[in-house]
Length: 618
Image (cartoon, rainbow, N blue to C red; front, side, top):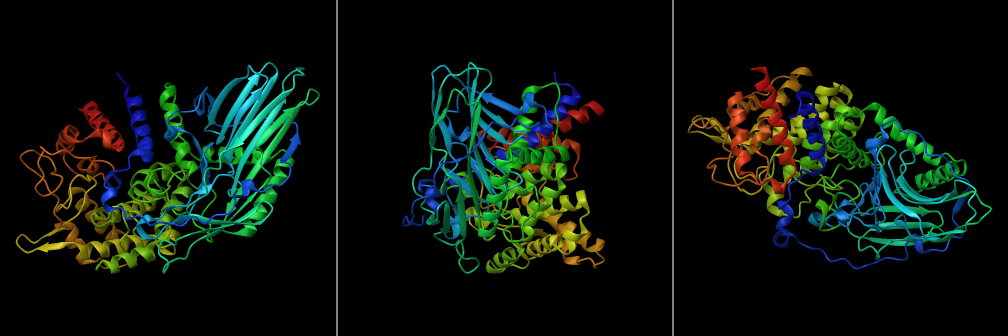
């Protein structure tokens, strides 16, 4: 039996783990019905990797691996082979650029292609997807490792007195830079000739971009189709690379060590590309490039992390989850010229057309990913909140276009902040996202009391404008003087359209109440309309069975896709009798299809922990 302390630890890890894998899937399961595909003409020139640039950058010798502040026994994950399932291949990223290691694709924050509901992350053919294909002489022992603490992936080969390694990472200080570093070194007096062959996986030409070589190692790119051209045009960007490390490299008998490097630098600002390329090159030649990167990761871990003792498996899951979240987030503030777009369920290293939610942002960011990050790194939490403040204008546009006041955040969004969900009914009906966004702002305010963001950064405006939306979206029932929200899709996407989703109505009421609380704090008068609606909004409750029906007409004979009503207990923390909370969990655990969403495990685990703690207190 788990101890009380360990049960709490397990619940915390479930919260973090679910933040990457709890996303609903049904909006794309029906995409053969709802998905409208836009055909693109392939307009590409040779990627930078195919342009002759001379020999790669190299130095004699090898810098030692910098120290890391987190425990290596649970943060260095090793294997003798790569996963056969490509979905499990590790990734590296820094919130601006990311890639699945050895893959043919690089993604950059904010770079989307495709009009309206086909907008997706634009695939940049990889100039960093290297792997070692042969090492001679034979007999080398191969190992792959993902170092979560240092943010690096390494393919290594060891043999009597010889080490060969190929390391890939997205630089944490020079955030436009991806690095591949090939090291050949002798650890004793072995004089055997060593040869290593490295191959680049650049894949087919991109169907998302035009790529034009401007000069040796410098490419201009542009997306083919703007998301909403009246809001923002197609995006231009630049890729600068150092000479490729594809080919065969030798370590002669009289040479102790050689290090070769490939730099890939991507950004919308050419001056920044050239500046960070020069800085990264100079850092490499002075032996400091990896040190500067690891120092940034150490700083992140020192600011906030969760250490788990006594269970290596849980500790590894914990660090792995934090690593993947942080790898998709900028850690050095938000850029005004190219701000962070937001967290997608698959992270920054995923999101091609037709897969991985296209790289779109929706409630996973606000409800599941934000809380653990904000608790550990409030500065990064602010960056996440800013993904919603910067799109407040388009949320207002979306509300107006659909006939409502205030701001309406889209179910899925990408570059512009307008609706991009390819499953049209989902985007129309899953409006609880508005309350999810407001709840994130509330949590950030409670955590930081950041008046600057709330007043001058539009944080309070999000809360007030989403409240204005709810005030015009509700329907007044004159029979009993209640308010209802009709024709919605709840988090349980198996059922729609439904009336009075208990989750949707609950989070709308929370939104309205917080709007007035915030108004009072800033010396503004109470909005009596918001107060009336929040007090009279229908929250379905069955007094006989002492539980909350999911929506009007719901019966416990129906299957549900994922956690829905139990979310009232966590994370909404709605006040209710403990018997009701228990019955909600027990009833819906029986009818929820757990294989559809890992978030089910997280939510039910937290609720079980609460009930366990309550039992101990009796």
